[in-house]
Length: 409
Ligand SMILES: Cc1ncc(COP(=O)(O)O)c(C=O)c1O
Image (cartoon, rainbow, N blue to C red):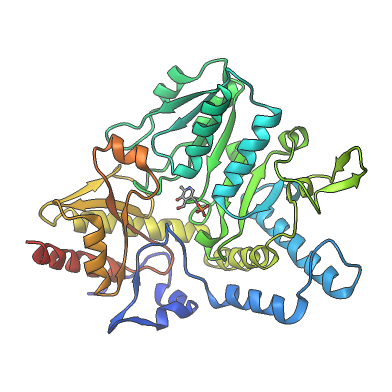
């Protein structure tokens, strides 16, 4: 009997995503790599082509109808993003993605907040985007990088954090949801510990903002980074949220047009926030696509999406663990991301064989080499779910993993 989601009408949702009309060879596409990037509904695709067909021009520059329309669309998107995460619109900076958001804020924090001898805590669960910038800063400028290590099950133990934090800790940089293990970190509790010790908290929301309702004020997050392309919008657009009182104090990290209010030969004055952090022509279509993506996500309901994915990951764990030789990683309760190895078969080989059946999964280190090292492996195969995945997708995955085993017997 076909299992149906209690939370979403997935068949109907799939009709909104043109990509699911295509085939891979003779097979229907089964896309299990949304942690890498998501597909786009027709409303998002339309928002982009409408922008170019009807309103194309630069923002904040021209005093003419097209430019005013483009500016309105762009700034409305900012407000939409702000409402989506419970922020104010002047706390939202458009970037190119999570990676750029974190790099940008790292540079700004370093030039106006961090100094030699300060300590930064991050974890061995992080994507390189939330690890390498801190490692680089620490090495280059004499900061101390402290690694909060996960437990055997793949969780972060708050007791350990209490032992690591000192009066020199200036920043705790941690992911909300692991892109490998699906671990959901207790952000509210981490924020409390950070603030009790006068530290800032930065959250990598790349894997959480697209999948679960986040309110930055309720969670008391100082800094949040996420990417549009993982939440139904286009590539090349991302978001950096920073609390207003921090934004007011830190310097921009990128300089040029759009971010100034006055320039003389001797000096420059910055534009008000958030524009002082947006130098140059922004990704206007990307920002507009995020707005359309948020409309779509709100229509479906983030709680429904989260519950649906939790259901899928439980189903997948229960099914895959029955395959002889398959090892699952990460905690029992996880988001819609599962990682596994199948005997000694290389994850790239698993992905290649699954692709012959139209199944797209990701194999490798997932930009988490420190995590791989701590798990004593080189990589995993990862299946990640979103609102367009079904129980049937997981049954296919399980069925064809058995075929993979046959091929590599
Ligand atoms: C947890 C996490 N952080 C950061 C990133 C980097 O995102 P982007 O490549 O969109 O900048 C990813 C991408 O997979 C991720 O999963």
